[in-house]
Image 1 (cartoon, rainbow, N blue to C red):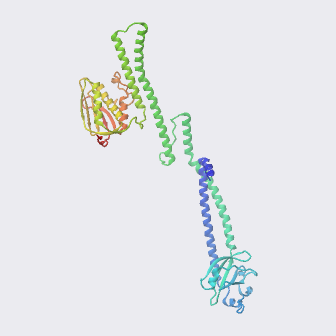
Image 2: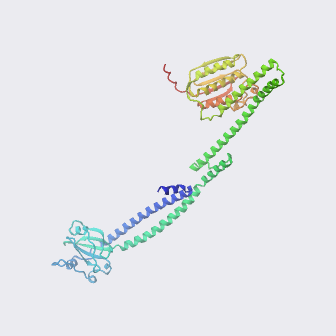
Image 3: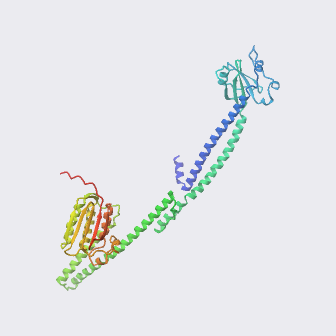
Length: 477
């Protein structure tokens, strides 16, 4: 059985489907044929019983008394020509006494009919009548009807051969077998056709997958019927969505590599130039003036810091959205904002920070969330003019950071969270253009949203909305 199942699983899906359809139809046809055979048999036997009941009076009471010797109690045979109709030659009429003995009064010479307990019970008046099958001494099967003889201790059994029923049933078996065979063959052909038709979209999907695996062409799309909602249509739409997402991801990856290469080229070129100047001074023995040397070393240090920051930002953005780098936990957003403010004050000593923080707890990755808020504050510090104020407020899960800088043009607002995008006014300032992209990513992972827009009057306001989380219990002392 296991080997047969293994062979079945090794067949192509189309063949398995056709075989299953043919098997299901074969079982259904076989069940219907067997049921039909039994129903027809019962109807024919019932008709035969009715015919036997109608022949109850083929032998009169006086004929029976004449055939039974009152002294010896032996049966005589009836004169068929004088007492019964010629159409009764194939029938058997038998007298049954209360002791279970019987004698045939009408029938073939030398033939005996099998007696059963039901016949004796009718003779004893224990049953009103009886129907059963019996076999004669020459092996022919008969249908027997036994009824009591009025005012006599006998019962009369009338029997007719079952050949007429069996011949009809044999013909019915032949017809049902032919019909069932034709039905199974037709079901197999129909199943194969249905399998080919129904699996054609699967074949197209398989060819498309093989084409993508062979050529890496993610632009391939499978035609789908928008009005259909069956499994094949859903699978096709899911495949198209998957290839579209993969193509978009690959395009973003290539764009990220191109943008990273462009951004790395500037600091690397400057770093290389400065190092070559220092190396040439050492090789030629021409000393660089101390002020120029300090300026070169400061530029090298700044370029190295910018490279390190850029590489860190790229590593942060290279992580999948669904795979945070640290442990997500419930943290106090007001404490993280307060820590980020301390760092921002060091970077903008000539700015005034006005903070109003209400307690708010969120579920996030603490280092990533702190870095995102630092990036927002750094952006405000970068564009805030000296002596101006940076206003930071946290209330009901809404964090706002406002500066009084030049603001952002309306046509630039849709691009502020794009990777490596920098406004024309900010291209001369330090930065990689990845800070706000990291902010948007971190806030999105925490289930919130971030926006950047013009403030009332002048400057820009960044707004971060984060869903709240239950306050964690205080730590045990």
